[in-house]
Image (cartoon, rainbow, N blue to C red):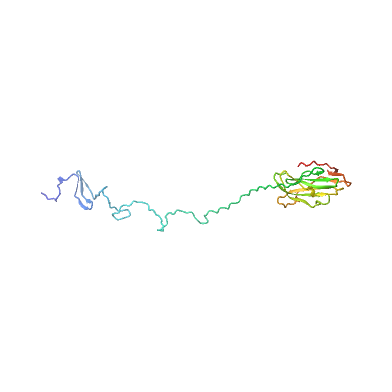
Amino acid sequence: MTDRPAGARPASERTDNEISGGSQVGGNAYQARNIHFGGRSIGLTVVALALVAALTGVVALTRDGEGPGQPVAKTQTPSVTATASSGSPSPNPTPTASTTPSSAPPPAAPAQPGPRAKATPKVKAATDSRAFEAGDLYCGDWRTSWKNLRVASCVRVDTAASSATFGIMVRNVGTTQVVARALVQIAGLGAPECPLGRYETTGLVINPGGTWFSDLGKCGVGGLNGKHFQTVGSAIEDPEGNVDIQNATVVHSIHPALSKTGGGLTCLINGKWTACDSYAYPLKP
């Protein structure tokens, strides 16, 4: 009987699936010469036996060369966050708008005042006047003296007294109230002014369609036998009270004359001295 090691079984007792000729190398590694599977043998150089699926704490080396016993870390992109304590700048700082004066928006232009609305003229009380009385009143036609102002110059003759009074009518033919200046003068007697002085009136307020009458008592002349005479009137708009009345157009009355012997009254009409026709009063504008 051939001696065999203790525990060894003869070849006839071996199973079909068995590892033969092996030796323990260390840990879980086992070096074997042959593995028999159903009568076939497969030669292995080194078989690493490990506990799969149930074994935890697998020892592995990381890609970064970490030592054994360290778990494999997941690969992820590092996140860099700048903190006040670290003082490290952010790798991708968020761009901010420049606050330099060159990039600042231009200051807004100051608002320009709009056009002022025209103030509505304040309506004033019309200037009072006394209308002329009819009879022995000789007037010229209505004439435009200034823009919306029309003037009719009149003379009243008293043949028995050889005297006359001189006056004008000023009418506003516009659509708004006006403030006017008026002047009464005499022609043919050597002096344009009335015996009581220059008869000029300012600050006359005349409503649309209204008429202002001068005062006949302020311009009367006697001793007119053998003389001829006329009333010369004018009017101009003068809201500020500083215009020159000479800029207005003068308007003449009819041109009468008294005979030297008295009682005879004639008028110069179309270049001829003829009987005076009394004008219907008031005259139509």
